[in-house]
Length: 330
Image (cartoon, rainbow, N blue to C red; front, side):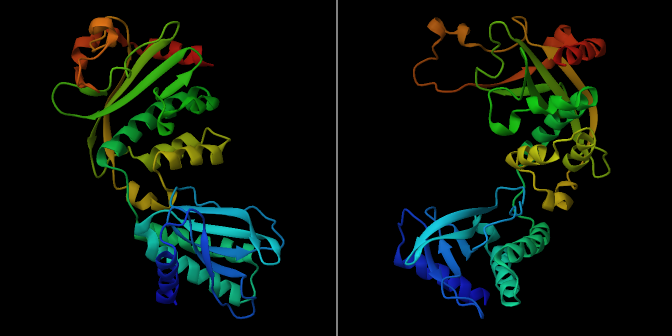
């Protein structure tokens, strides 16, 4: 059945390779009508399935990752407009486990399950397949960066559970954390000689008028027996939260998939030090104002530079200062 399903997807692609809308072809299932189940290719050439759902009720399952999209859609047919459950695989590397998901759905439908229940049960199985299959983890550098961000979020939510909502790192914001008039740039680096951080662009450490900019930096080292990892930190943070689902959605944007927990847990670290610095005019950095008229030299579009934090030691915020800063955020 899996090869048959893949062949139908390929047929759709060959027939309309540049379609700007979802194209579908019926897939026969015993006991169901011809167009109740359709294999489809969306406008981005992603493979998927459409299940007619006359009741159109019940919250669809969430995978909490960006690899699978499940939605309800209304599509026109020869008899009018019908309600469908649409399931799309967004990552080519997951095609094999996704095809197994389709097979599971069809099997449940053949056994008399409603489209909603078939989807719910099959997605539960897909989660297990995804965990075994693994998929892609972010790069080592990105994992280290996420650890650094979660270390600060953990410290914050221990003081006030709502402070996690200021975390913007996964959203691609210019600041990793924003709360009131306080901005925090979060960095993590491996233990290696003199502590240093890499700054990507002139805006990353550019403070704004009437706002306070801080840098939170953690020094770690890889350790197979370490007590620091992304899943461990997530567990600690969630103990202080009520909005678990919202937090999970933010984690998915950071690339974390709970179904891959066993893979993430292998990336363990030992934390040597975490420090907070206040970014003032004395902080070592390159700024736009260092260039005539705040304009980069012709032909230069971006500047990346390293900062030796030993040269910012007098700007380090004391432990009491950090506590006072946290109180200001409440």
